[in-house]
Each structure stands twice: as structure tokens, then as C-alpha cells.
Image (cartoon, rainbow, N blue to C red; front, side, top):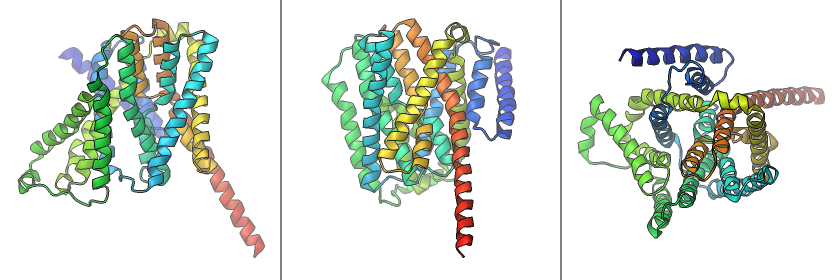
Length: 399
């Protein structure tokens, strides 16, 4: 207990110091969480050595994050808000394979390794992207809705990716575990279509009895969030997608209006642990020994992902300002990329060096993308202000 308390106190103190520093420079706290993980990990101070345990606890944060997003999001009722994400993610998959093939050609990699690199291009970080969408009130705009729906499609795309990796790893692929995820997705589509214009779903009077019972509220909320996550995981989809569906449904129930307040502290704590676990995964010894390949890989992923996504948004008829900003938001490799890497390594699909390099690149893209997003946003905002002033001056000159 003494050792545990020391670890928790040191973690909280480190997060507070880093958060105060980043707050002064108007940077997101996610950077503080990742840096804290690096500093307190087994390769520097060794305060936390059992990375897997914190990783499992931290993944609860993603479930709670997606649940809260489900509470806040409006189900799109315009066709273009549904079609555009499909087109964007489809183009992202094709371009991702193109970049991966190019990398594989120069590094002389086999087909499985090339496919895994392509998978890293498919996925972005839901936690990082939605943090910015919420912070700048973009989540329920047309542009923000397109980006968020792309992230949801990536959650759905995880099912065939995991099926492929498990098949390569020797697990038997049956008709049931192939058709079940697709059937569940179709059911979700029709459910959302049915409730998108419903203002409130009525429940029996029994649920009104928990309105003033905080303990019951807390455990019912956690059961709904985690239960839907478990259900989605059992049918072969990501548990984060299940939690999001739960959030959408609960958002239509006025009797559960208290839920967001009851679970907010849990969300903050577990999301912080998730990003701390990402920092813990960064093997500094391996990074220092192979810093050239990891840094080059990180820059390549950030630049190519950013340009690729910006071009896709421009082709979808967004202006260059939004397109470049959308490209920056989708520049990193996400948490599902880490999951794919881990499964591929444990099942013997990829070798140790590719696994460690992939983890290092993923951690650094998550870290550097937050800086890149903040810098680009300031540049865009400054140019917008300058353009506005020029238009104002020209207007007065005309008078």
C-alpha cells in the first residue's frame, strides 16, 4: 500500500506540474499525460513498471470518453453528412495502402508487414481529435460532424482488421464471427435512423426513483457504458463503439440527465491514465538506438497523413482553411494502431523491430500532432484576422 500511494502521489504531482506549464502555453493536457508516462515509465524513473496493468485501466477512459461524446452528439439527418465520411475514409484506406506499399518497397518488407503499416494510416486518435472538436465547439458543425463520423467508421473498420490479423495469427475464421459484426452495424444504422428525430424516449416510472439517489445513478451509469462496450466487443466490434451507442441512446432519455455529472470525474481520471500508458510504452533505449528510423517515420506519418487528409477534405468541397485544419487533426496514428501492432507482434505476424518502431512512431505522432494542430490553428486564425482587417480597410476606402 505504501508503494502504491507513493506512485499515485508522484503521478498526480507530475501531472499537476506539467499541466500548469502547458496551461500557460495554451496547450492541451493530453501532452502532459503522455510526457508524464515517459518520465515515470520503466526506462527513466521506474515509478511504474507494469505497463500492461495501467494500459488496461486506461482503456476504460476511452469507453467513458466515447460514452460522453454519444451524449453530446446529434445524429446526422442530412445525407451528405453520412456519405462524405464514407468517401473520405475510403480514400484514406486507398492512399494508406499506397504509402505503405512505397515504404515496403524501399525497406523490402513482406505483404503482411506492408498491410500492418497501411493499417496504421487507417486509424486516428479519437481522444485527441474529439478533444479539439469539443474545445472549439466544432463537434456539431457540418465540418466537425464529418470528422467525427470518419472516426466512427474507423471504429467499425477495426472489426475486419482484427479478423484479418487473427486469421494470419492462426485463429479460425467462421461465418459467425464474419457476419455478426456486419449484422450489428446494420442494426445500429436502422436504430439511429429511427431515433434521430425523437426528442425523448419514455421509460417506466420505476426509473424516476433513482433521480435523487447518487449511488444508484453512478453504478447504473457505469453498467450502461461498460455493458454496451462489452456487447460490441463480443460481436467483434470495438468496445468504444458500443459505449458511443450507449451514450446516444442515454442522451435521448431525460430521466438520465444526471448521468453526465455523475461520471465526469471518472472520465477525466481514466482518460488521463490511458495517455499516461501511451507514454509508458515508449521504449527510450530502443528509441535512442534507432532514433533515425523512428523520427523519420514519425515525420513521414505526420506529413503524409496531414497532406492526404487535407486533400481529401478539399475534394469534398471544404475550403482550404478547413481542409488544412482537418488534415492536421487527422495527422496522427491512433490507439487502434497500437492494438493492431500488439496483436500482430504477439501472434508472430511481425518481428520485434517493426513492433517497437511502430509503437515509438505511434507515441510520437500522438505527442507531436497536438503541437502541430495548435500551431496550424494559430496560423489560420492569424491569417483570418489579417484578411478581415484588409477587407475592413478596403471597405472604408470604397466609402
